[in-house]
Length: 275
Picture 1 (cartoon, rainbow, N blue to C red):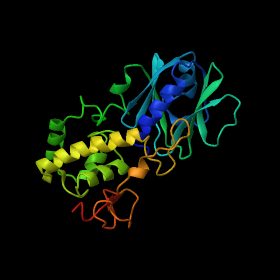
Picture 2: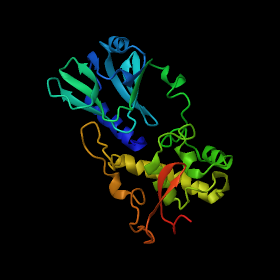
Picture 3: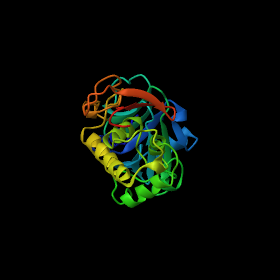
């Protein structure tokens, strides 16, 4: 958390709030957030005078384009961006501040301190970690194709849930949306991937893209502490079918939702719909 829909929502919000702004200076209060370069003074100096030209996304990573640079930012579990006027009191756990020439600031807050930022020359970021090994985008029809998806599923013997959580196979999916997509496709998360039928694979393929699309439209899921760049909650949690609903009735059949552990991750299923 956040997963693809939440990161995409943050991307859209930041696109509205900071594109066109010029960076005057950068303050880094927690150096380990900056993973590349390994000198925070270089990070700040290289970005001074750069104008933010766009906000992109790759899986769960944000890409902040500051010609001629791009910042690859991973929010991890608790990372949040907020825009504020200079002089407004800093919230606790604010670790990186981008000071703009117009008197506003983009502030990165991270209670758990797991977030990261990497600085690359624009165009080089995809050839290096952390983006280098990422799989296809499930909302990009040019990357996420049915023939490719079926070939991947058929040659893997691992359980289907850990496979879908593997960011080198398919990016952006985490615990929430894997549980939701598997429930929608009526597939048990402990099924071996290569044992799924042709029909099940097709159904899962469409369930993944439909689940993510609905979540993006709803602004993501605020099941923990997620808010977008304007401090607003996502609303997809109102549509959630199984995740976090242990002992509550399945909306399809009425059976109590069960929680189990699959691949070390808490997992929610309907035992009747997902046999």
